[in-house]
Length: 333
Image (cartoon, rainbow, N blue to C red; front, top):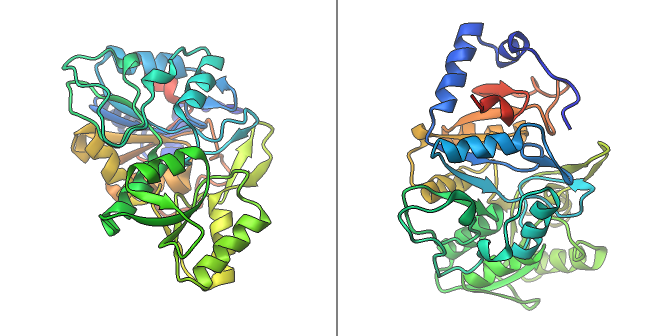
């Protein structure tokens, strides 16, 4: 949750611009047509909506913005991590219901071939997709298991005829890989794919992954590079990047990651929205993924101080956010 609220003058100083330049940037972000929005640490934390989150979503809808939510983290209410590949439609619906947002499972879609919303005018809350196939309509409002789909799309681009994968991750990752022509196999797979944490991330699973990489020549793929996540009490927990690092050191092979901060991920996202990058911004709480992703893709990155980033690590990197806010509620007029 937000522990410290900064004044407008402090936010200007943190963004490293004048007060007038800060106000101009805030106006420019509000005028954007498309918003790519992380969820953990931005919309909610653990099992609680963050202050201003509902008002922000209402504003997006009332202003006819096009927006997509990057998929939530693992659905254990005590654990918050962005940039992952786990949730199923039913789990997404149940999590949002617990936070007071009623969106049925039928409004989350995981099929790789069929479009869910094809009407010209769609109620924003009636079209939350997880499908990698989206038909263009006037206003796009989408929830995507983004790293799972990005990973599956990347592998499909490398092997259009499909192939074999050994995957450590949640069902969302497995579904996406199946939908893009890949089968799960422990025998000479083309790829070892490491997703977000799950029951398969044990010594046996990691040892099997290592053997397939070193003995069978499987390529190491990660859905995201996040080395850790954060519980509601602030305790850090292992993320996908930590497991990738273990396998990289043990195998001597370098992993390729498909999620943020990869510009590949941002390219997929802007394609989903059907907007040029100049009309789009990304809103997130992590400098090392969200803000770097926007920087790499030349999409204006907006940092909210309601999640992972704090004053201890805000100035560690050479790249800077276009705008810094206490939370997404500050984008609401």
